[in-house]
Image (cartoon, rainbow, N blue to C red):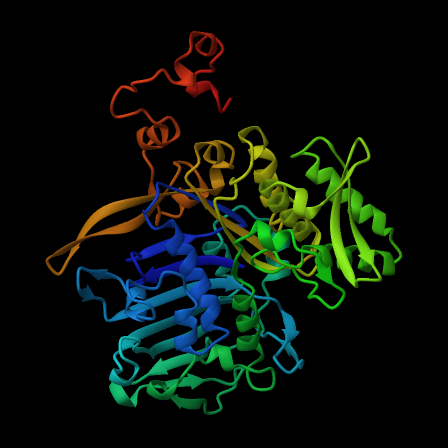
Length: 487
């Protein structure tokens, strides 16, 4: 679970500092940098999984030139920042496995991870260039410090359940030295005073966290696993409509592929555990019926002859419709519903404009579904059972979404004029609503009510030449004043 992220020098993110709760909605106009913030999260995830250059190339729209990774660095005209830095606070799972399937147990589950990267030109690679690791650090946050770091609403029982600390010393990974002599230290996980392993930073092709294993660095291994679980969900209708063969992965892909296999697997697992698989399908159908009232049942047909799994929705008139016949919005809603009941799903789920394809009247159902995907930080039970920590971060420019999200979850993104070194540039700034938990931290600017109202109730700069729907007399007499919409 990502609880705080500070970014500097990545795209248009300069000195950006944002705290996250289980559910966060980032709202703002097109082009202010909302997507860049999600890209920063995805880039960190890639750094925990791939070599530095591969991670950079995995980020979308990396620059004006194909393969020019300098496009990831903040720049004004042709002047590029030399470095980019990330500082992430996160809650990690206490137990897991490494890449070889060996068990790992963390000595602390609330940690702060920092990494700084520098662009390094490489003539042999033409415009491609490469990245150099400047700094990498990993330290724990104690249980006593946790309340100051977790400002969002949560119960002490939840905090005590997810935050463990058996670490005596602070650092798991640290960096020392300058220039060519700079080294990254990997400290013993048990916190003993033994000598750390020293790695020459300039020679590292990937982050230390990405190479961690359970034998030497179990806590770093679980940091790696946590970061690898952060993903941008871009549900593509074409992928959602495809049937699956019997050997398909049973985890929903970022583009929505393997939806039938995932749902069939969850239903079968419930059946194997002694429960009724039909109950899973009924739960999914009940949720989807909040979007389309005509849905009576959802199920996956297993075709033994063709070795295929096909998802169907049955209407109240008894007609069965395969996934390829369902609307884009229905398929996205269905995929999120399946994800919400998948017991092994965890980590950070980022989504852009989840309202796409959803009728405005049904947007509250979508918002509620997204919230139901997240962990309940106010649970009172302190036992060790339950789902993995799950978190949802969305961005939007839809007034219909902004009006429906909880006020504690809303972050407003703005593009502001700034100057540094005599150069002016536009940068992302994030604001919160007055009186919410982010405003109480003192590190968040508050959005003005006037700006919020202007965003929710935009007025055309010039009179419309044609009468709008909202200008009709028969509509005006039933129109609810904006100030009363939230009551």
